[in-house]
Image (cartoon, rainbow over all chains, first blue to last red; front, side, top):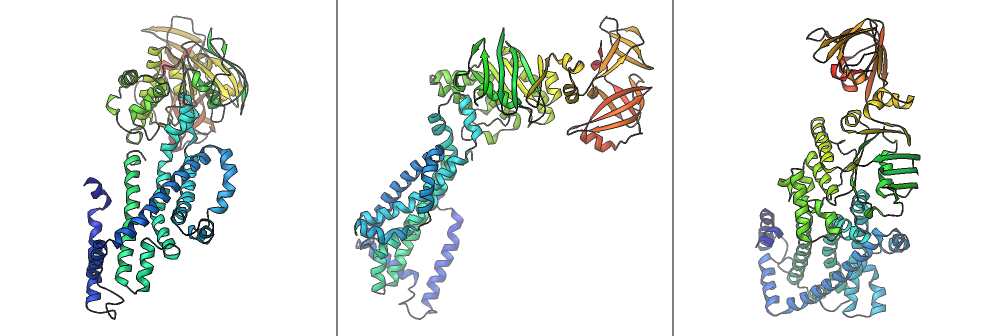
Length: 253
Length: 347
């Protein structure tokens, strides 16, 4: 319950309720011609219930969720590890920085045609896209965070007898946490945005694919259900990392 | 036998420095900013590489890493680890040494008690005042029971009152623990109050090493007297014992009351900062108060030195810059000089 309260601050819900009421009203009084293009909120809720009950939404959501979870986990772990190494060892930074600086600006979806040919259309493809989407920004934020730690803390730890490894784990990484969490927060939401786009273009299952099918059937209510699910997942993922950040750094940062 | 010996140390601004620090001594390394004071501490701590040799108890420790030198180091900006609470900050070195948890708890609690900060155990550095941070950093530096304590301008960020209080406490603590201490500062008052001996360092060279009085009253060269302010030395024509530990001397027409140490007084010496300046005649008895005319004003970074002619004697007085600004003094103006009785040195 405490976690829930932290995830959704009480007052923030009021503008959302007003927005939904206006939406329902505008659709019901037919300000925009026909329910067809602009279904009322209640119809979207009914469709959400129907899609959940028949398992279509659950199945597609699970596909997207697992892809995001696996891709993001691997991408962020790899980004963290290499980011720490680059931030800590200037030799590794010098060796990898030019390559990463070249690849980093490429948008994750820009890799899609190449990966479709290299990996084929299958489960690995969206995971690889999410991996790329998470890896570079998290690596960049982590290495910047590590480099930004005041060298005097390292001097103090050294004078107290700490080895390089002990300084890294007990001083440098904890002090870089605010930067690391900034990367994780941004990219956890971004991973959802990217997976939907990838599923729309190249993958036959998942929330993005469901949206494309709904588009071909002109089912605007289903598209809106999918968009709401997407918005909710971006929000929950970002809030989850915000919660962790607050938990680990709020007392001292 | 010196506890620490520096042989021809060269690093950055420091050139061929030789210095001996005795066992259990409180040595103050005094000099202006950029003189090489902190560099010398870093050399002793083994935090930077250097040319020359450092000896502890006659053993060369050049090859010893910082972690093995048994040194407690209190840095200028303290650098308490912001993500650790007070207990964990103090316990950091002990944990690194893999001490048992109950040993760590015992030692940390002992230090918390010694520095009277038991109430801060679970606070984080950002929740502490300047003075509290100072104590925590000192406890952290002492946790591993070091043989040498290095203090790099540890009180520079504190207000005057807290700094004065902590100075006294620090000196007391050093005496109780009997730990060889090197204290870096550019503040003359700090040096005078705390030092067993002072080493004056300027532009990377040790200019003079000696006891407080030697340094203040017998500066060996121009650089030292320039930095600490050359003392006023007056010849005494006659002296008369007044009893109760005081005597009256006549110095070139100035009748001055001085402390009587039972010896014949031939000269008296006063530091420029021990002569007060007032624009109006100060209240109280007419003792050690003289009228004079400002003949020269010398402006430096932090203090103003005024040359004042009183009864034909040239006296050098020192004023903090902010007070001088408020007084708005100029050459040729009349001022009153007040000599601090207890700070007059009879030679």
